[in-house]
Amino acid sequence: MTTDRKVILYIATSLDGYIAKPNDDLAFLSIVEQEGQDYGYADFIKTVDAVIVGRKTYDKVISMGFDFPHADKDAYIITRTPRPSIGSVKFYTEDLKSLIDKLKSENGKNIFCDGGAEIVNELLKDDLIDEFVISVIPILVGNGIRLFKDGRPEQKLELVSAKSFDKGLTQLHYKRTGY
Image 1 (cartoon, helix red, strand yellow):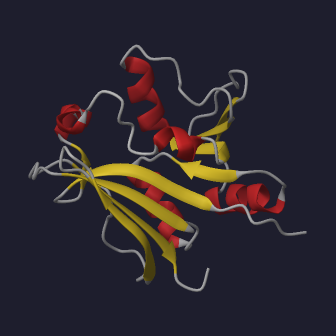
Image 2 (spheres, rainbow, N blue to C red):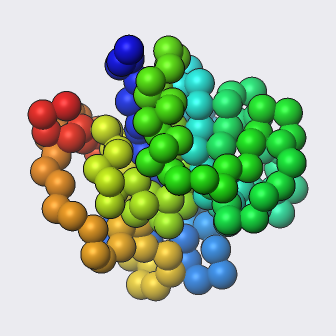
């Protein structure tokens, strides 16, 4: 049985391709904050019921004093170190492709890849991301954690939409060609 579940990367990056500055500094994201503007996030999050996130990204969110924002969904924290589940948050140590194949074989909404870069690049190696929603922040940070690393296969994409916003953020939505 196959479903139409898609793996969607929904993420922000600097114009020069960094999702964080050195030391996991995300402060540059605040330059596009605008009251009442969530750049489509609330609508997007309604379309997913599973979230995949790397352990470093998860730990960063928790270290900032926030509750994990996706605890109401099936959340998979990709890690090399086994940990007990916390409610619907599961720490997943197995093969990432197997997890995606399992989730796509089940009925449900889309699957949200919330980063980080290691997870994104593992998924790209196996051509497992179906759509990309990338919010480009109008800043060149110069150094940090790159969204896309070298050494992955070429993938052609088709533009779904491009939207610009008052604070200079541009949101690009692509899908894999042939999807």
